[in-house]
Image (tube, rainbow, N blue to C red; front, side):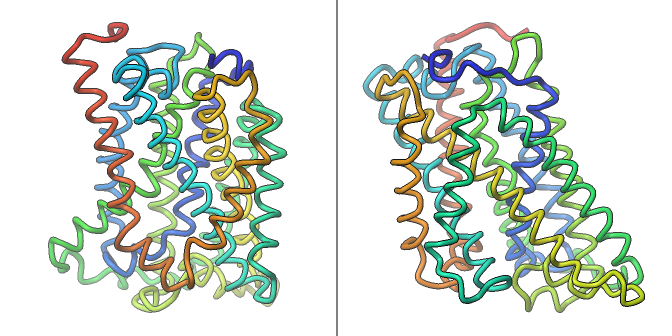
Length: 366
């Protein structure tokens, strides 16, 4: 069924670009973690990366046991036709929820910082229409876009870091390791689950990586690139803003606003907004693609494309009603989102792997 729904194939390097761009699409909008871990956010990022690598190895192990199959087909084999469908529906709800939550986050950013008078519905419709156009072109087009995302992401971050250098004060990191242990655990859990481990959506995409490429190395390399970029961004922003960082929203946006080099390099937040839109477009497209692909597979359709406008309309509607205010969105991100996502990113895949190993399912790992 997977080969019927999607005939495109991507290379290992394109998988790496996709993963790195997907991860950083979250980090630009996750500044709420700074309110938890403050000057030691870099510690939480390193710990979260270590946790993510372990989870990534779990996802890789599951995928390699069933070569050529995505998580929907794997669930049918591991849990049986009936209960497997139930597990798959849970995953599809998760992918759908991430799609409309990320769409709403972009809408909140645009209204809060760029175009405050723009109706939320107009922003959501524009985002989903753009993403729908991309996913209708297939996984190969999304993979090609990921390379552009990578180039833009690295170029803008390096440029902003160099321009912010005169305003950076590394004494802002003192004193370190003085927070309660629970804050480090909270920050690590949030970062590990939200920016990093949402990559479990690639269990829907692994079957479309060309067979001559091993998914393990490019997948882990993509995670590492996302980690390095996240770490660099967090260190730069705290060094530039210090304790003020805990009192602002959209930390990176506020950090790059202070760039003013000879009255020439100013208003660099425009570049931040551009890269945010590009990366969020890519991340939402991947989530949207996985959702439509999975729904089409469950219903036995020969193409996912007729579902794109239907699911797109659902995403727009849910993105508008999911939160009543930015304060609700911030509370969700800081206290609820990681707990909610842990069930889908850790608990269900963990149970799947245990059953696979216990019953000897699948192909032996090389």
